[in-house]
Every structure is written in C-alpha cells, then in structure tokens.
Image (cartoon, rainbow, N blue to C red; front, side, top):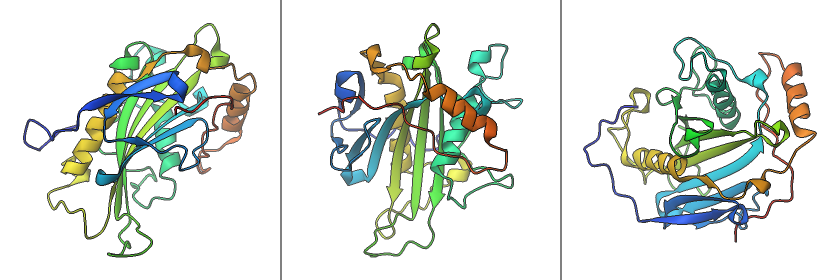
Length: 264
C-alpha cells in the first residue's frame, strides 16, 4: 500500500509486551493500550485492548480454522503460486465480509472495498505459517455531531490473519484474527486530505496500520497447548461451508472451544 505522507511516519508511544490468554501468546502494543476484555464481557476466545485517546481498539481472537471451501484465489492475487499453502487469501476475504456485512461501502460485485490489495505477510508468525493483511472501512454519513449515541462517522479496520497449523494434528488448526479498529467521530476527527479509496492515509488511519503491522511482526505463541484439539469443530465448519451457496450472506466464524484463560 502506498503512503503519501511525510517520512518518518507518525511517532507511536513506546511499546510494551502484552500477555494474551493468560500468557499463552504475547505481542507488542504501544504502552497506552489497556486490556478491557473483562469490562466488555468479551468471550474467552477474544482479547480486547483500547487506546481511548485515539479511539483505537485492538481485538485478537482465536477461531476454528476456516474450511478450505472458503479459501480461493483469482489470477494476480497474493500467494497465487504452485504452493497450495499460500493460496488461502479467500479466508481473509471471508472474515472481511463477516465483519462488514452491514456496510453499504461495497463495489459493483457486492464485495467490500479494501484499502489496497491483500498482502502476504512473511514477518513474525508469517515466517512459518500462512498469513495475510488487508484494510477496509465503513462510512456512516448519518452520524450526528454531538449525538448522545456517539456513532462514528467512519470506521477503518486493519485486518491480519495467521492460519496457525499443526500438520500432524489438523484438529488443532486455528485462525488467529487481528483487527485494529480506528473510529472517527463527527466534529472531532477531521482530515481533509484523507482519500482511502486511493490509499492516501490520514494520521489516525496511518497509526492504526502501523499498530496492525507491529502486531503481525511481534505476535508469538508461547504455549501451543493452548490450541486444544477441537474434534467436532473442523467437521462442523466444513459442513456449514458445503451447505452455503454463493448468494448466502457470510456467517460469523465459530469460536474455538472454551477452557482458555484470559490474560489478567
């Protein structure tokens, strides 16, 4: 994705190592982020962090690995090669569609309008597992200045996906989905130069993308026993995929089983 802003990019607060799922995973985030998973009653498969001043949140979730039925490639897409393990960007498109299912910001084919192309990530866990990144946005032109409902006028979502595999134990396979959510509120967040369709990023969007990229680079799995076998999960998700038609609205990916400890 091109970056038409001055270099060096906007400074982030100093990084800190964040414990996820009771220490089973870690990543680096700016030290200003607070873990609010308990306050938001987030399910056990999610960790939720918030940078309140920037109205930016980070959600990391561990999901059943999406069935291969949902993974597909078209000519020119990243990962389009003889290596079938790389031909999986369709999984990220499915998650993208699930997150923005109610958005009116779609192209003529009905798909969300990404900010740039899906990119293959080869940093961090991307060195050993298939991983992709992409961005998208949702506009809400009806958001009112000073509204008590405090609805954002625009939400930018930077996604990352790690397809964590156990070649000898496929029942333990999982998708690790990262989304950095940047919210713009009417009357407070203005960037006249921002043009997301042409990949011209304002400060808030630029910072959000850097945070996502840093997570992809620093995310580590400390304890693989966290990925307990989900004997019924893979079969159930694959059955759901086979029953779905191309016209069906995307269903939310099912979370992996319970029994995980959220970080303090």
